[in-house]
Image (cartoon, rainbow, N blue to C red; front, side, top):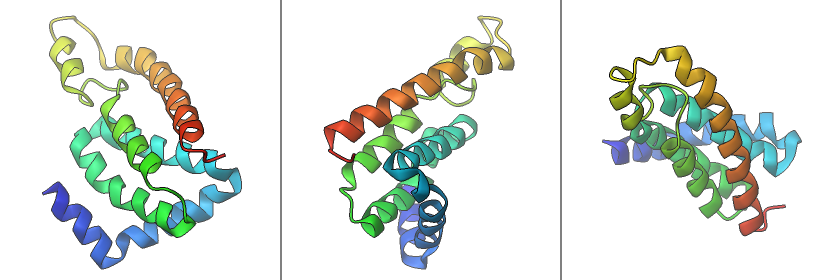
Length: 137
């Protein structure tokens, strides 16, 4: 299903339209702005839907952005996968969060209070490490 969504987005041109929107909005912020934007959108989607669905939606957009900008797509793909995999904002965003939600007596706001700063720290580390590893700056 995820492959079908990605393929449909690429063939229909929806990925191009959304990618151009992201490029137009975030390009003035430079490559950092593009990477942070992709990370934020992926993390927010992965917080409320499954991480696999978030990757299926954002992956074709990230690939299209990289190709439109003439940049190596590997850091964009890795950024999407890292953003979807390390989601600490909500208990429904990741399986282990949900496993300890009830037995630990946590509330939804507990995850937001601790998970949001942790996600932001992880975002900065991921963007800067990928940026330097792939010479994007």
